[in-house]
Length: 142
Length: 142
Length: 142
Length: 142
Image 1 (cartoon, rainbow over the protein chains, first blue to last red):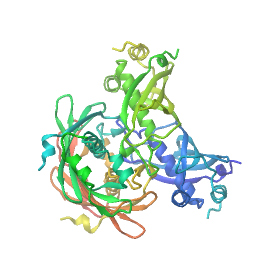
Image 2: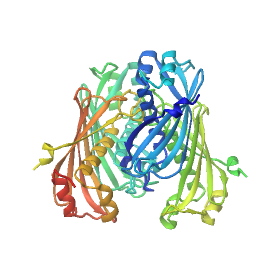
Image 3: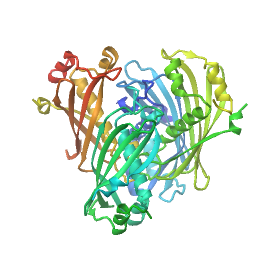
Image 4: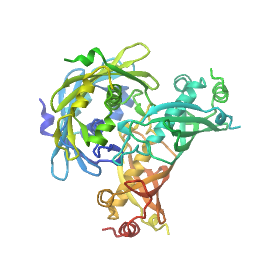
């Protein structure tokens, strides 16, 4: 369990001017956007096409909980690395864990978690289709 | 024509911290979000329920052009007034015009325009249903 | 303690189109923006001018932790009420608690918390000036 | 003149889930954020460190006008290319032009322009320092 931790997925991006606030640092809600960028990349690299889950299966991963600890500010134009791995995976829910690092020196800027449930178009809880479970768990991807 | 101008709709909001950038003023893309807040309010006051257009008619107002002139900065916590009126209305397109004012002194901070076409779920151009045309044009609302 | 809870501050806003995502509901990071709208209003009503803290004292309330539990979706044009109260207040940190309610039926859509520390322009931890402590605690406001 | 056009700068990014709206496509204000991502990259590749302009010279590029024409929707997870070049450069103002392309097929999704003036911390119009003018104009960059 927690195998994902030993095999996290990383994706880099730069802090956008739009993401700063008048304190001169990235506004705190953006970290959750970055978490989602990491989650998308994690799914893509595992061969879990989130777009396919929505379009073909009519299923959605709904966030039921999100949290972030902020350790140091991210600034405009900083290159940041979003590191994502699978936390817990249960029948109807799963969690992702994240770290935001500053690429230049590897310093950890933030860490967090999101918990998701699978629902259909009517909002009813569903189990994640087995093929998606496999892909999330498997390091090899598709 | 341009009758809307003589009867604009106003809605007030405060500049959010999230909307500022490190220059200490509201980031320029937010003005387009405010325009949309004004547009929603304009439609609501005219009895044009945009949600209804989407949900019952399966029609969408797609933006094909947007522009803004920035005259003075909006700052955190400033109360701003978004003034919206109907620009041109043609068979398959319509435009809205906007002014952003600082409530405190009435100073104009920005002005702009958005041009929209009506499309269905498949993205095909459509005419706006007559009832919506009437509502947009009529000052009385629903 | 937790006196704020018995005297929360409420502010209403409408869910913006910009805040929805392709799932048709408000994107999860926006709740943190709404928390901040609630926090700003809380401070304003208590006579705690956050802008003054920044401009006159050169002090900033930096978020060190944020969390949200999502109970039900917020949708475009929904009128939501953001209810904010003071959580814990320590020498160098304080927390705010929030609930997002749907105005129409009072249903709770989300709840969360943010934890803040006070820092100066150089990022050093500082104590909140006594006058701000008093204002936050006092129900009467300024 | 318009030499920049013959040597545009490109940067790629993916459409984020956060950037979609309930119409299932990227919300129209985000294109202006992408323009800024292109502008930042243009400046970086020309050796024009915008951060340096702000921090060392106390000068800011303030947007006075922005416009976008939307040709086709950008969707979640689409890889888009932001192409940026210098438009006009005058003593106290300059403009950038942009195209947003879908990487997969090179289709143009949007095009636009932003006009900027240089101001100091007090908001007074200034001339851009010569070294920045040179860098913007020169293809070689720093």
